[in-house]
Length: 213
Length: 213
DNA sequence: TAGATTGTTAATCGATTAACAATC
DNA sequence: TAGATTGTTAATCGATTAACAATC
Image (cartoon, rainbow over all chains, first blue to last red; front, side, top):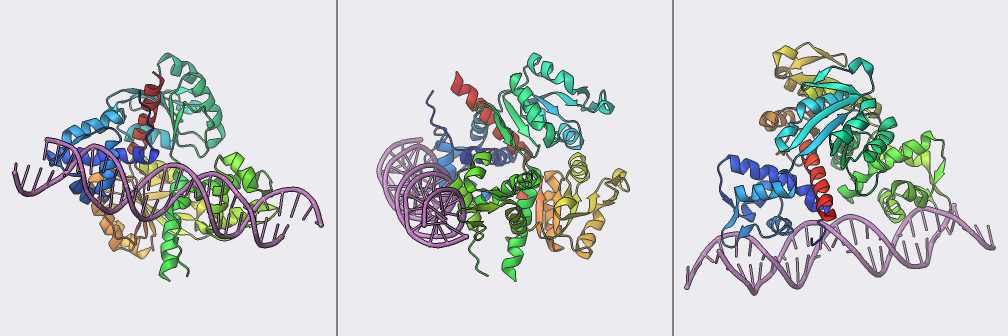
């Protein structure tokens, strides 16, 4: 119940810790110190200890951290021990690619459906799941307790669809549309603005080239 | 030549400014004050002025900013007035989706080729571009002055491929593989770790639910 | 000119790093 | 026990916000 809010900067680093610890675990490594992890991950040992201690003492003085234990604890913090019902809205290139490419089930995300408003796609199977018409989406979200919607539709309709999702009890939106979604504060939105990301890359390339001249 | 380094925090906000200014421009709005933009974008007017002033004075006291001018200046800062030759490596679901879905040319990214090591894909056309075998990639990068590679291959081969790209003169890598790429400091890497992003969403959903109980 | 709003300096806030006492 | 390394407090650094003089 103690709501000491963890900063998004810390949260943003957790998946990377989780990834490295998973790899160490798979390599059969049992213990690791913050200094060793620091060498591998290129972040300071101090930051690693601070980050972990936001959630409690996972280590042991003089010994370090048990890899498997730490891996599992971070998984729990991220909520990967729980399941989430997920749908994809927008069965275009990107929606289909995410359905096929993301290993949703591996991390407790249960892929429950995929929707589109293009009749040509209705009934087509993606990952053994028939594409359904958008009209059915609202009832489906409500009846199946969908937590997460992946929005891979054009920006023009994204805000309207987000509104419908919120009305029907969605908890979080993974937003690939190039628009900011105005939703209530209790709805979590994680934006993946791919063209923003590419622009940032372009900036850094140009900056480097200019500094070289 | 004055290399006052701009922080990545600022750079990360530029594409969003660019997006909003583009929309304002399309709506025919000519001028805007930092306060008005603040209301629309939900960032402080102070931050907006600080951000823009990293690159020089784009406004006018008592008047505000000219939307079109500011839009173009930010575009230049991001290097969108220059062209970049780009290839996609990995013609799986995600690689094909990005080729079809991203409007690369719109922002000066010239889509020059797509590669894969699966013979079943060779010759298949994506966006009017035949998928080429990976063996041809290195020579292609060198001969065609490729600046940017989009990495949509499994993590197992990503590090090796990145090394080859660097050897052949790549400037930046847009990395979708779930692995950190160890490349020289002069090579720009922009990571899009989709599963990290989804985990962050899961954390925020769970955190909110726990605080509600 | 008076009013508005930038550009910029100063103050505050938050995040990162350093240091070290606690302890395994 | 001695050595190692965490957990945690303190110091530093950087980013954000506030304030206001400059100026259009």
